[in-house]
Amino acid sequence: MPPRSRKLASFVERHSLWSDAQAQAVAQVERAIKKEKLEVVRFSFADQHGVLRGKTLLASEAASAMQAGVTMTTTLLAKDTSHHTVYPVFMRGGGFAMAEMQGGGDFVMVADPGTFRILPWANKTGWILCDIYFGNGKAVPFSTRARCRDALTMLGKAGFDLLTGLEVEFHLFKLENPRLTPEDATWPPAAPEVSLLTQGYQYLTESRFDLLDPAVEILRSGIEQLGLPLRSVEIELGPSQCEFTFRPQFGLDTADTMVLFRAAVKQIARRHGLLASFMCRPAFANAMSSGWHLHQSLVEIKTGRNAFAFDHPDVLSTVGKYYLGGLLAHARAAAALTTPTINGYKRYRPNSLAPDRAIWARDNRGVMVRVLGQPGDPATRLENRLGEPAANPYLYLASQIYSGLDGIARRLDPGPSADAPYEAAAALLPKNLGEALTALRTDEIFRAGFGAAFIDYYTHIKAAELERFQKETGDQAAVTPWEQKEYLDLF
Image (cartoon, rainbow, N blue to C red; front, side, top):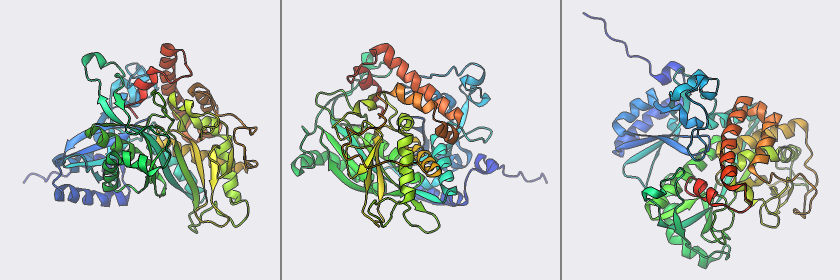
């Protein structure tokens, strides 16, 4: 008799890419696919901009694809926000001095089974978030999810876990003209034409919320069905502007939630004749800027206690103060990660409920970091108001960890509370993306944490975006049509 053929190990098995928990979760995913009679499953990864990319597979192929991985082209990792490839990928080393990045070859998406969801807005469709590896099993060094995981590992070695909560503003418009004529199919495409759902300015009034509610209800229902920890839905100050907040989550979960939340909101909205935009400041008359405020605290792994809480009039513990000092010390460099678009810097204005300098205060919405809580309050936390909604959440979180850990290591004093935030003597935030990139390139803590190769990679891509902007607009102070095309529908 011929010898029995042995089953070959899968890509995941050969390279030991799953934890025990992930391996056990695969069976649950397979059962869910069969039970719900799904027809397709979307395999996705978050790219360098925090935008989901991926492939849709037939449900019958999903089980094997989770084990074998799903191939994608490496050029996806070389693109700026216009989706132009900004590295010479067909030269030796692909512009990265890496054989794996040469010639537009493949990398492999490997499913994280614990992230599996059924999409309530798409017919019989599953979704799963992936990590990315080269064909030889090596982790792709440009994976922002992996870089965030590295930062969390370093934080864990220091004895802490990160607890963060999302507070995200965005605009929700009625889509009037999607601009689908061939003439509008420029690269990037012409920005859609929209109209408002509310006239704005009546902040948190019930009448304005009720005007927005028919549209928001569609989004809220989809987000809740996804199982994301939605906490509140609010009407913001600007026309057609709203805010969603989420319950705190540990570690990587917050970043995963933000990635899926943005994608879900945009997809659900578009299916109902709406356009949701996480662009910071759209180029519409009377538009207001949107921010992404990240609430954060450290939790002691051994005790489960909030390391920022302290029974003292100063509210913050010593650890909390030093962590805060680190956020302020690295604010200018972190801005390139928390505010990664050209458009986002038009939000940093005095007397605008947005910061313009690296300062903190107790419960003051004009500062960069707002300290919230009372002495001994287990919910004591820092609210960093630096970010924009288009930020890559993995890089946002990692920037906070590296900044805070450096503050703790060097015992950085954050100084006194700045009760007059737009008059305080402090380092100004970058006025534009170019300034932020310069600060990031020279920040030794970020170069050590993210790796010099990653910082050089990231700043190269953002510099290409900035160069195109300056060439076409002359770096104007006002929000330009260039920004509208680049960001309105991408984020």
